Length: 328
Image (tube, rainbow, N blue to C red; front, side):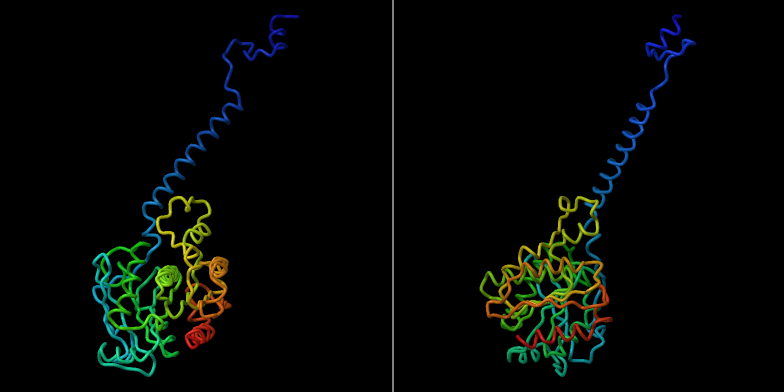
């Protein structure tokens, strides 16, 4: 056998012409895959860091204004009045007092006389976008059931100073409650806490604190509210480690078990922002009955999405809210 044949037989990779061997195909592919993996991990980390840094800008969408005039509510004179209150950290926040249907008062002092007679007051906590100007329809629906409404704007919303955060909104809610009870003289058992979407988590946390303190509200009603912001974010961004990086978690499911007043849960049946499964999860964690024996209730509004409840299911929504308020 020749020397060349012997080298081939023995598996020598050196070509017969004496040139050095080229890289093996498997080795090239490993380097390519490693390079792609490094780039993917790098850019994924960049995306996570950027989203983590700007997460509050992606969570809160306030409308801003130099001043919001009650005339912008579009209601007759005497039905809407400016209100303001101060938070524990010194911010002065603005809102509106909307008088119930059929009522009117020239001043807040006149309104207070009707409140002292026992009229229900709905303390309204809105969602993460806009300001109180786009919540007037809610006040009209509550007003049709004989309740006044205090529409508040959080810090950083409307003309209010500050920047929103979970802790900040909790402070705002406490300040609004103190304003209603201490300044306006409304009895706790005549105040209904209402929260829309993220505002529902704000209302649930406040209600739990009040129940712990022995001053429960008359009731709590929430519209399309999640079990937690963490669950909602994980649903929309399953590829992100939201459970590790989320700052404002709004864990309503951790607070709802301590709420001892009557509870109403309303949810859009086709909700694509807060899936109805998250609303049902929150409902399941709530006490079956209030301290007074009122059974909790979950109402599904068929055929509507998160932001079109009042357009597509106004009648069913009004009926559910009216029944709830009428039973308090």
